[in-house]
Amino acid sequence: MYLLGFDIGSSSVKVCLIEASSGKVIASDFSPKKEMKIIAEQPGWAEQNPSDWWTNLKLAHQSVMSHANIEPEDIKGIGITWQMHGLILVDKYQNVLRPSIIWCDSRAVPYGEKAFKEIGEEKCLSHLLNSPGNFTASKLAWVKENEQELFDKIDKIMLPGDYIAMKLSGEIGITVEGLSEGIFWDFKNNCISEDVINYYGIPKSFFPEIVPTFGIQSTVSSSAAEELGLKEGTPISYRAGDQPNNALSLNVFNPGEIASTAGTSGVVYGVLDQLDYDKLSRVNTFAHVNHTEEQMRLGVLLCINGTGILNSWLKHNFATSLSSYGDMNELASLSPIGSRGLSIIPFGNGAERVLENKDTRCSIHGINFNIHSKGDVLRAAQEAIVFSYEYGMNIMRDMGMDINVIRAGNANMFLSSIFRQSLASVSNATIELFDTDGAVGAARAAGMGIGFYADSKEAFSSLEKITVIEPEHEKREQYLEAYERWKDHLQEII
Image 1 (cartoon, rainbow, N blue to C red):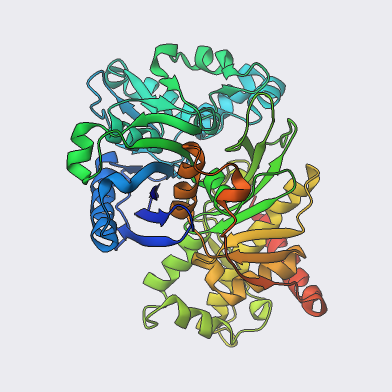
Image 2: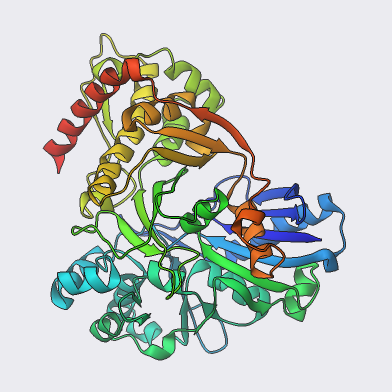
């Protein structure tokens, strides 16, 4: 018996097949091998064509199935995870009306800020746990104001994972977790927010049926079965946004547990069991995967847009003579803690929630042509990403969260010893690295959704811890000195 996980990222789509009883990965692949195109017709805009997600899902799925050499009927559940906050619009024939406005698009910031003031800051925070900000609801408000003719054709709105589920099943649904990440969910009244939809003029008919995060949400249609080589009727039994799902994949379900990722964007995600929020909405609170009306489980999400994308930009534009990220890390390791006084502000990927939606752009501070080298710049970039995490984690600490252990997958920036050691030492937290990723987590969760696993403990019993990184206590003052210098430069800008 096997379980399938689909991870719809902004860079690629990953597909993973696991053997249910052992949790062993049988095959996995991703597509495209180069990053998926992001359309940016104006500064601050970011769109993708949902059809590209489907095309690349099919390519990665075909590769996985050919490597696995199993029968389609042996797949008993499908889990889906996705890049959060994207907006997909379809007409009554399920035709996509425009490219998806994705997570790092900044155009809706003014709409969310205005709504925050006019709905009422206290009401937004106490009911939505966030400002409407630059999230899906505000993106839809932008469409309504700027593309009225298109807005009038909308039958249903959805998030990226809901689109994939629609392509698989022909049915449209949405979860409470999805509604909450779109800032459509009223946590006090446990329903779609009347305040938000009335303020923005969004018809309630736009919202699909609410389906459970875990459970038989829909099944694979005959047409999708033929297109993908699956068995008709295979259950789609789990879906969640990428950061709640990443926490799930690291077995983070309970209050006080912390997960992190460091890909294109960077995230620290912790679980709460009571309604809470940051008054400035610099970190955001959403429904976690196991949140119910009876058992409150909320995910506090710190998201930094400008993280791994900085490292990627340097590789393609600055360190072109180096063939890999490993080579970059090796050169960076020759620079001491603090990068010889060089500081980088890494926020070059749109407006940053942690900075109250300011778009500061990326900048370099303190460069000295006589002493600084390429390695110093590369180390300063990694330290900058770490410092942006610490800046945000202090907001989470002010909300009462203890950050003593951070769990992460052994991927992306966490592959760098500089990054993970700096993060452990600056935050004074132990880092635990695990052999997992979002697609694997979605596959395991699909097993929970069909009832194969009794609970999360059973589903994640085979989760493998790779290594533990402890803070360098004897060097912590050096890290903190560099952090304070970095923070001073940030304060000059904001």
